[in-house]
Image (cartoon, rainbow, N blue to C red; front, side, top):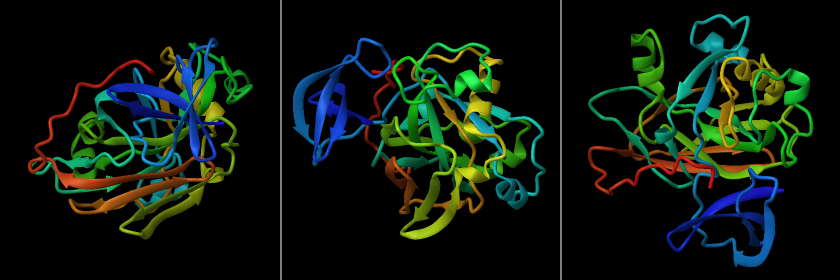
Length: 276
C-alpha cells in the first residue's frame, strides 16, 4: 500500500494510491480507525505534499561505510543520532532553498526514511521490526528523503544543527510505502539526470529495526515521526538551478529544484506539525 498526502482545495488529505487514482482515507494512516471513504480522485495533476509533518526528525550519521570513508571518518560503534526540525520538511517538487551568504557548500544526501506508526518507548529491535507496515505497528512505512546538508557548516560546528536545520533541508516523499522490505532497497540520487549515489540499504551499518530501537531508548517516538537511516557514498554539491532526484525502490522518485532563497519571494506558510 502506498499513501500520499495531497492538497484538496486548501485542505491536506491522505489517500491510498490505486493505479491512476487515489482513494481518500479518513482521518489519516496513523490511527487504528483509519477508513477508506470511497471518494476517488485522479492521481495525475494532484498537488502532492510531504507525506507527513513529524513532531521530530531523527537522523543517523555515517551509517554507510563508504560514506564515512569519503568524509574521512570512521564507522561509529553505535548509531550516531542528530535532529532536524520539522520546519525543514518540504514535499515533492518544492524548492530546496539555498541559504546564500551563510554557506558555500550544500550537499544532497539520498536516504530511506522510516515513518513511525505508534507511540514507542524503549523497544527492542525485535519489537521495532515486528509487523512493519501494519496499522499500530512501530514502523508504519517508509518514504524517500533528502537530508540536505551545508557541509562547510558541518565541518565548522561541533554539532550539526545549523548544517542540517535550514528551512527546506528535508524533502520527503512522494509516498509512504507500507509493504517494502527495508533490508535491500536500491537508493539512488541524480542531479540534473546524472547519477551521484547508487547503493542499497543492505550496505547500512545498523539496520532499520536497530536504529529505531536505539532512538526509542533516547526519546519517545510519536506517530508520524521520521527516522532517517543514513546516506550512501557519493554525496556532493548542489547549486541554484539544479534539480535533485532521490529514487528508492518501491517508493518512487522525490524530485526537488534548488533555488537561491534570497531570490525566492514566495511566502512560506508555517508548518503543520500534526501527521494530517
